[in-house]
Amino acid sequence: MQEVYDFLKKCKTYFLATVEGDQPRVRPFGTVDIFEGKLYIQTGKTKDVSKQIQANSKVEICAFDGEKWLRIAGKLIRDDRVEPKKHMLDNFPELKAMYSAEDDNTEVLYFKDAVATFSSFTEAPKEIKF
Image 1 (cartoon, helix red, strand yellow):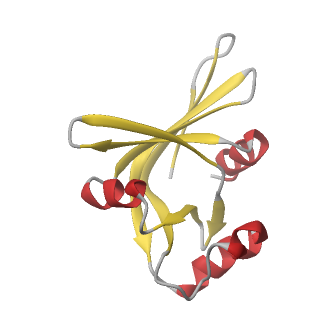
Image 2: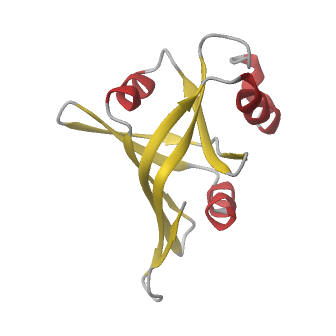
């Protein structure tokens, strides 16, 4: 999982895909954290993306570094504890202007049953499950 985290941090921006009914929705994200051995992302509960994840927790992430790309498929599980929210915000202090670990809007979610696949045009795919 560390390799997945490092790749996402290197890319800085990744794209998260959800579904809304039968319509795919894709948007850029940048938050990623490892807390208690799980890979987390962050958003706000008032956003459509949060509502989409709660309705259907299956998501995919895609990131590209110019040579290799990473796809992560799995379920996102909300963690309402203050500790992972604080950990995320401490790693992304610029978000503290909009979010707080104690507010009712900050949402952190971790991957469950995830499969990460690294691919390129020159190497065989590499799969990591977590």
